[in-house]
Image (tube, rainbow, N blue to C red; front, side, top):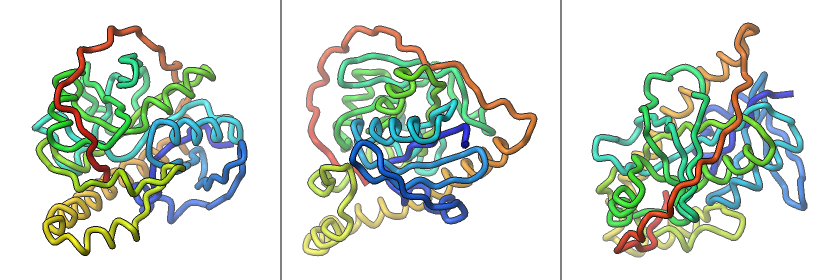
Amino acid sequence: MPKVAIVAALEREVRRLTRSLSRVEHRYAGRKFIFFERDEMVIVCGGIGVEAARRAAEAAIALYKPTLLQSVGFAGALDADLRPGDLFMPAFVIDARDGSRIEIECAPGPGRGIRQERSSLVTFTAGAGAQQKASLAKAYGAQAVDMEAAGVAAAARAHGLGFGAMKVISDELNFEMPETARFIDANGYFKTANFAAFVALRPWLWLSTATLATNSRKAARALCEHLERYRQELSRPSNPVAAPAATAQPEPQPAAAGGLHLGGRE
């Protein structure tokens, strides 16, 4: 049985890697999940959002009994120094729903030097445009934002498992995301064809959409290259996989950040 379960949002974030893995379909709690297996690693793409990530993590735990959960995928930069394709391993994950903070005590695989001390990833309930990212950076002191890590962390904590997060930047701090929230279905999956039709009729969105697509490809390539090195490291007999369980630390709810608005997610 794989020792590490990796939870991503969308398959396109990890497709370069999943092409070489075995594809298996399972049902859990009335839902269908697609898993990609090889050696010590299994990947599940659970959809966009905290709840979708939590469901996928729970399915992976029940079906595969891993010792470690990893939240991987795209994130938006809250730090002006972060660029598309940069790998980001936070030391903390903050859940914006209640301000709780989870310390990550295990770094996922080779490339540990890219983890910044005291750095934070905030999980927000909607995609973040430029104004919203600036507000989140100010409110939480975080360097990046995603929509799933806190859900995976909650599942790991509930089952006493190790937890890690490995994100790759897909959009810069000042990048204005096309509006995509309406194209995410109830299960957290992105309706690509509907979004393409929407953009096709709005020429003012063509440039930002093309830029986002280019940045997303760059981010996916960097992420998959890292995960493949990680998979190879996990397969070495001398490599210990077990890691300490993530621990939640109470944190006062930060003051409401003014100007927050719903943005998109690639």
